[in-house]
Length: 416
Image (cartoon, rainbow, N blue to C red):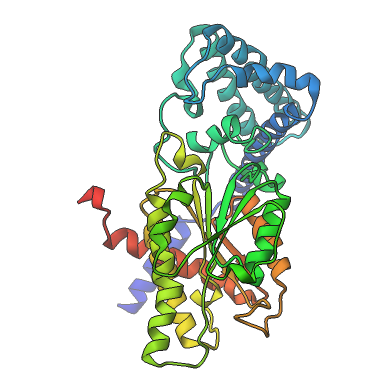
């Protein structure tokens, strides 16, 4: 019996001989094909960025911006038609020519995939110019913005920000690769940013860096007497438990950064437990819920954001059990709230830095603040700043598995 089975497996193996030449050819085609698609995206979006930096290109490109109202409805049929000719058709034609020349020079069949990809842009632009079919331009369809900017591709909310938030940012057209490279995936220019824990080391450093990035800062603090006066920073006092009193101030805020916290270290008394959860978890959640009630209006989903400092304690020991427990609870509920897509919610996963909570921190608050904004400009939704290499591995695994579990086993009020 064993001999028969062995002979059968040998016979099957001989029949299913792998053609390694064919496998290698397919892999080579796929590799060059992916490269050509990435090259197409980089060339197209780089040209778009140049249109905002080079005056003679801007003259043509500005017709594109003049064609739309704030709700992305067409301001003038004539302007819209001209924008298709002088921007969309011109851009896609240049892209097609460059990619075709590259495919002719380098004898790799996979490169023609990029040529075919570029052809779709020229086809869509031609349809819009000659037939006026605006439905082929998905990112410019008129109407309210119903979903938040996507992190994986450029949707209407993402591209709307390029037209009406900051024309010198959000250059990407399909995939946000170039924006991540250039640091134009989020603009803070002119944004009103409120942050709690403003009197702490990180709070003051973040406020200073935000001002440097032309943001208007509102420092929310329970200890206004500890704040060092900073130019461009408005101070708003608040009390723990009275977060609802901040609603009027939060109405005018674009980005809320929740950064306050407490560390009771080794204590595990009932008072320490209640205090840790009240400050680190429940106060933050009340602020999130209050801010979410201000996400109203047809374009609010494109501009309103919440950043939450959940800390590295989500996945790593902090040598303070109650700090870990309360921060993990906050992190898990933030993951749950992200599923509703009410607005962009970023997590700040921060390692040990010197502060009042941690005088033995290794990093400086200023360094951490700079890296936070560096990654935020590149539209990272989970901003990890730490010297612990394990966190860069463990957090994505934890966040993905938790997100998937919550997505399967929880429902929004809208779906019930």
